[in-house]
Image 1 (tube, rainbow, N blue to C red):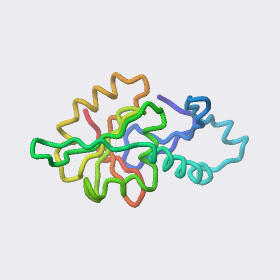
Image 2: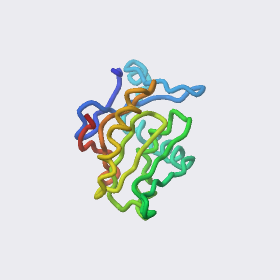
Image 3: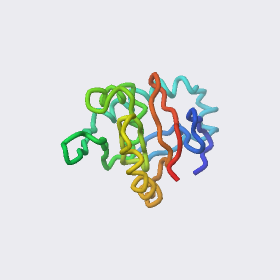
Image 4: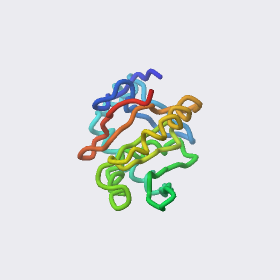
Length: 162
């Protein structure tokens, strides 16, 4: 999708961050003229977005998927809220998984309501590539086919499924 106001994500081929308002259960992307007429800056938008993302993250409970030996392979965050994907921007996102998946994680966000989180040294993110691509392609609210990581609180794209 094309948006009037969007910011690039480092390393990303196609995925962007889009400033938006959440009104009556609907996400409304900010239009260029709205941003210009309100005089709001990217810094001010981020100042509001990060605590909002943290609030979304607080509503989510990771579901840990384990292998036959009960070793955690990856985590899934999901809800019916279209704001679920924004949780990856929360300052505490990576810390939530530090004790279970390690300090360095990979993230797939196929649609607005589902996030996969993998340990960096695991191959689980490769094994689930078909699932991520199918969820992205079949969603009415797709987010990305790219794989991300978080470096010093910043979302960075590393590559793309298919």
